[in-house]
Image 1: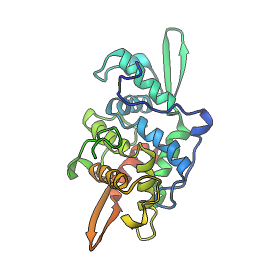
Image 2: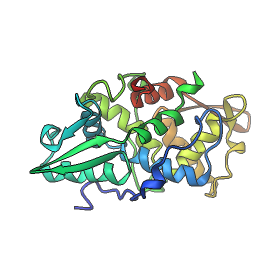
Image 3: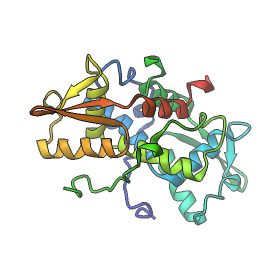
Length: 122
Length: 122
């Protein structure tokens, strides 16, 4: 399972994905913050993962059942693998209810990435 | 040289990195846009590349000489390799002046990534 994407992503502790960092255009990233933020960008650096993330993020109630987002042209185990990578990077949270697992975007992490790329610079 | 990071990044044509895509929270990404945007996120998905990018982006005049941004704890050839990856992904542009190469952030690409991560959702 771990070699499906050919790339290992670091697993971050919840406190490691707390919002951080001013816009890239306003200050240089520290080495520690670069490690933390690069892991998030890396998680979105695969087209299938990015599409899965976009499906969850754009789902009407901000939450998607895994059963609703599997049409990305890869097998179900590969979908599960990619969803796990997104969870490990702190970008998604999940909750099992009955038969299905439901995914949500972690808004503070999305905000941290957006802030780093700096609308503030506009 | 091409195996320094262990990961090959796709080389995008200039028109492929034009701004695109509404915020992830408002609409699902198409497959083609996901390929395009994932390449940009992947380019930032390495701590050394992200620090180099942040050094260029935060440099006082929005432009940095390669001679000013080499203190990231890796060899000069590795710095050059990572800068090339950032250029290939459309995130940086470069210009040689005399002895040195100067790098600038491509603002439309930074804006496209920021927009995708969607301050608009706030």
